[in-house]
Image (cartoon, rainbow, N blue to C red; front, side, top):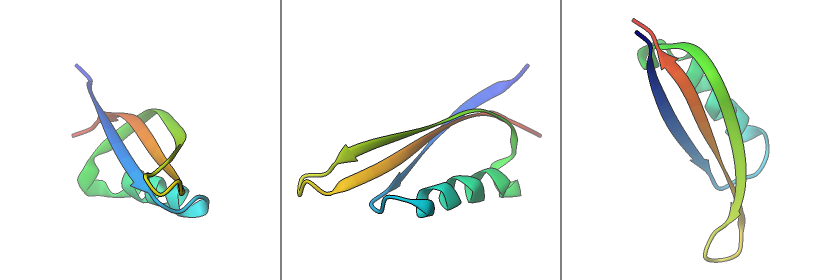
Length: 63
C-alpha cells in the first residue's frame, strides 16, 4: 500500500530559490520520497502586495 503525502514549501522570492528548495526536499533521504506524483507552483501576493510563490509536492512515502 502506498502512503501519499503532500508538502508545501513557501518562498518570498520568485525564481530559482523555490526550485532549489523543492529539489532539496525531494533528494533529502530523511524525507523518504519514493516517487513524486506532481509538483505544482502557485503565485500569490502577500499583505504588502509583494509577489510570493509556493510549491505543493504530492509524493509517495518510501521505506
